[in-house]
Image 1 (cartoon, one colour):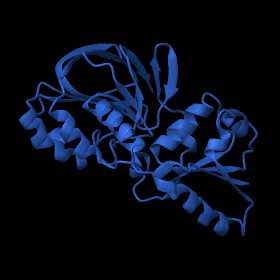
Image 2 (cartoon, rainbow, N blue to C red):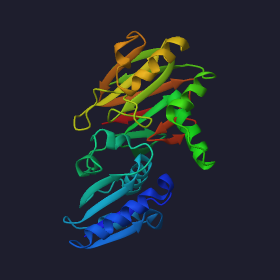
Image 3 (cartoon, one colour):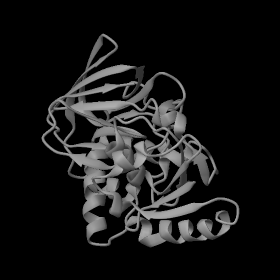
Length: 278
């Protein structure tokens, strides 16, 4: 059985249209069932636990849809195969799989990275961030509610003007570091964030590490000069004293002067310390 799970609120209804089209195509060979994810709210765990090894779950939507569903199911282990048909707005997960519109994430679902805030643990598919990154995501969520569409890049340019860099204490696999005047802290499972920006170009989803990018101690003018290079992952070639790349499995972060965090685009407020684990 193939279950087509779509988010009707994602990308102006595009997931529903694509799910309907594939339902007509696939039902000639296999039994299919198209399900609105909103109708499953609060019942995701029971829905998944009822599935068999030969069943398929196909998620239609973007990174936010995937994040929401995986956290609703966590910590239940998927007994069936899980696929994604990317049709949201960001699709950073899909970018790591190049141009594969339909791809399997069963292996990722079984070992997702975790973040703990105030003793509450969540999983994430792409990454977490604080600083300009989290404020951009907060602004984009506000824009979405007002049906305003702005790219990550354009929103970031506006936030740069008023953002005040903060300090950051971080422990990575037992090693401690301190950074002043931090603009970006991003801990990534894959290469991309912000809808196609290659912030951690050397990251590999299948390895045992998370990749970290910290942008600190840099003047705004220089940051604006190198910022466009993040789309092709070449920002790490410049201002090496101000762009620090780290890798680790257990990461404890204590921000000083910033309390807003984003996890796969979802916002958490009043954050004073986080633990990220691979």
